[in-house]
Image 1 (cartoon, one colour):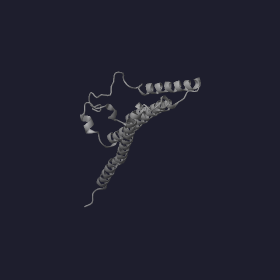
Image 2: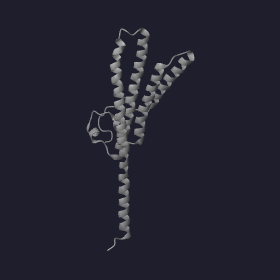
Image 3: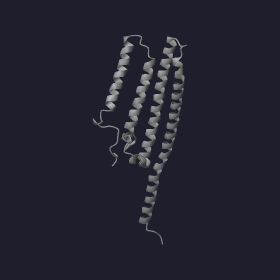
Image 4: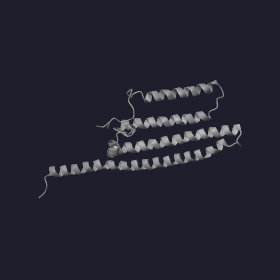
Length: 195
């Protein structure tokens, strides 16, 4: 006995909708790739930090004259900024991976259970993910500006004015990135914001 066409149509529709719903699991590829890249960047930044610390012993060497010490100091500060930049980039990748997982796959149960966890990892929608990523990217750009500012040589008042303008624009960008936040809010959870 054949099923009525309406019943077959309903079965086909359920099969198709289930297939569509499970197609979201392709996002796992982006999550895993982003996590692997984040771990790789954390590793690179950590190795850079280790070698920076190991080579700082040369700074105390009595054989260094004042000029060589000044060059070593400038290079060390530039390397510190590069390490910070690496950790910030790894953080962007980590937030991206966790945000995609929460949006498309499933809420992270261990994060929901923790009352002392930063809200930065709770992603409610794509705008929330974009906002959090945007803030970290802004921090990366600020660190890059700082890195170039260290190496900058001021030849005249125009250079100093350009530098001051850059600092003012950074301040404006930070102000605008926090303009929508409520005063007195902090990044510690009082409870799960999704409840």
